Image (cartoon, rainbow, N blue to C red; front, side, top):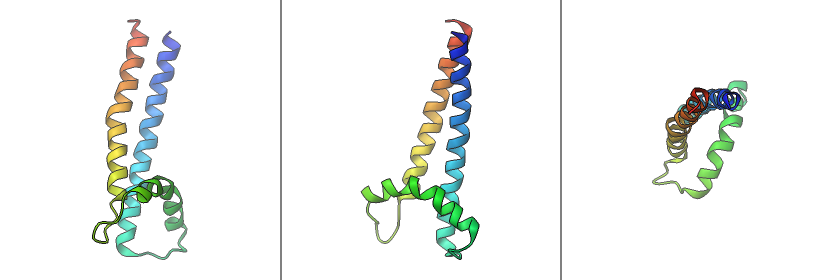
Length: 101
């Protein structure tokens, strides 16, 4: 059973890193939207390509309010929830499996 515990522990660590990277990308996208950078810049294109799959589903469902796009804020809240709920839960389950009880 301890093998599954170590697997869950590693999975929790990977999810934590992925969620942190997603948070950084969404924040970078929000900051870039304030300065209107060159859309042909490779860094801007990469940030847009990584962030759009996260923002688009929320953007479809949440309308702009007074011209303000709230989708980055909502996505950040979802990421923070997952990072504060899912990761510790997986770590706790893994710890209990490793300890045997």
